[in-house]
Amino acid sequence: MGRSKSRKGIALVTSFMTVFSCVSMLPALHVSAAKLLGAEFETTNDSFTGRGGAAVQWTSDQADNGICSLFVSDRTEVWHGASRDVSTLMKPGQTYKVSCSVYQASGEAVEMKLSMQCTTAAGTEYPEIALATAENGVWTVLSNDAFTVPADASDMSIYVETTESMTDFYVDSVEVHGAPAAIKKGDANGDLSTDIADVVYLAKSLITENEPAEAGADMNDDKIINAVDLSLLKNYILFPPEPEQPQINGDWDNYQETATGNDLKALQGSLLRLGNTYRIREKIAKAQSGEKVTIGYIGGSITEGGSSTSPDKSFVNISSNYFKNTFGTGNNVSFVNAGKAGTSSVVGNMRVDKDIFSKNCDIIFIEFAVNDQGGDRFQKSYEALVKKCLMQENAPAVVLITLCQKSLSTNEDWMVKVGQNYDLPVLSAKSAIQAGSVNWDSQYGSGDTIHPGNGGHQMIADWIGYYYRQALRSENASAGYEIPSTEVFGAEYANNRLVDFAQLQNFNAGSWTKAGDGSYNYSKNGNTPMTFTIDGKGILLLFKSNSSGMGAVNVTVNGKTNKVSSNLQWTWGGQDGDVGYYQPTSEKLDISISSADGGTFVLYGIAVIQ
Image (tube, one colour):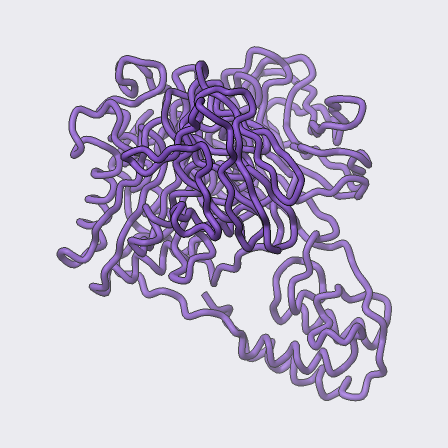
């Protein structure tokens, strides 16, 4: 959505241009004025999660700024509180201004603390950011104008806790100010936005030299900031290259949710982060105009419909019908269910081309928080899958769903970091269940500790509908979307393409035998390697996996050997995958695959990383 330009503002731009048209060249300087985080909890939890056993939920019961805040409850230890990952915002060794407001009504004064948790060479550390006594029934500010992150810190999060009391409390107005990690074009004053204020700031900077300009003011990238940049910035503000805002039908600003009580709290809790709304609004506008829209869902057995009594009871069917009936104009909305039981994002990253992209999906839901695990194999594959979806030519809207087990175990903690980096929505089962006091056995579950029953599938569909409605409120509209250049775990496997064995150059099966389903099986009658040639950076292997009875292979590429095992934990004889080989540059690679231990190995496919 374009910014409105007042006549007074335009007059200021014009007058400054007149005065400074001949200002001498000045070197580019940096300021540290950027607001890197501003969590107000007006419509979401703003990516804050419960720390320890605490539950968090945004609420209108109290507010320091605006009409809502974050309520922290169910604390059984003093360190239980509200936490947010800041690994993509704050940098090791850098100094920041960090603050938040807290409120408690225990009937007595309570000492409260704003802290950081991070990993260093010494282990897990908890440096204090700010400490203050919060009087009963009064908003108190916890603030540090010069907090320095440990020089070797990683996995950083900030959190609010108490020192002795177990009382519930509220958090509002969480802010982090500091030098921005990225340079935004036209951002002269370092506030991570580009508007008339930057023109005024840059003009003053050029004449007084007392207010150094941010590097984003170098509009023509000539490494100097002068009147030419001021002129270019003025034109950039007056005629911004912003995409046209999608035209949405319906008065969504005044829509009243029909859910009440804990049901409403569960809805609100499910929206862990709203993210950038431009793409989803664009796709909804497309559906409302009568154009064809396809919704794609990729994930494991829950996405496939596991433990719902029939396909029409699955969250995929229910939520796609909601979209069709709410935004469609007849039969212009369809869906693709690419859920596959027992699979992780490692497999999803390889099969998404065939199962989702080939159907030209406009909206893509990604659900792997139950089947994925920790570590590079999953984290890099998950981020690669997310980025791969975002990079598609039809610019699909991407939504992350993080489901959980009955114990609330989930991979949400690291998946939400990907959502934050790419500014994507995250729909959280854990947050919804905690916020709405959902009973797993009677309301959500199917009888086991993993899968939702019909009630759970209906809840997930309801969370998706709630996300759509919040994204359509004008206050949540985003002016456009750009895929960030930063990565969290690494997305080097995003440019992969699953190919048929017959498409591999110079392919020779060796001692491997081809099965009826097209897979190749290691033959124990010999160990002549499978060989082929590719042009690329490496390969991913798609294979059958189980926790017993499976073997390993040696993948040798240009003389370098890597061992890949198909005997993996938490697998059930379905598809899995791993990196066979990777290098940062593309070239011709001669590859051979042979048995490492004589065990069973079923190879379903090869994905070439380009």
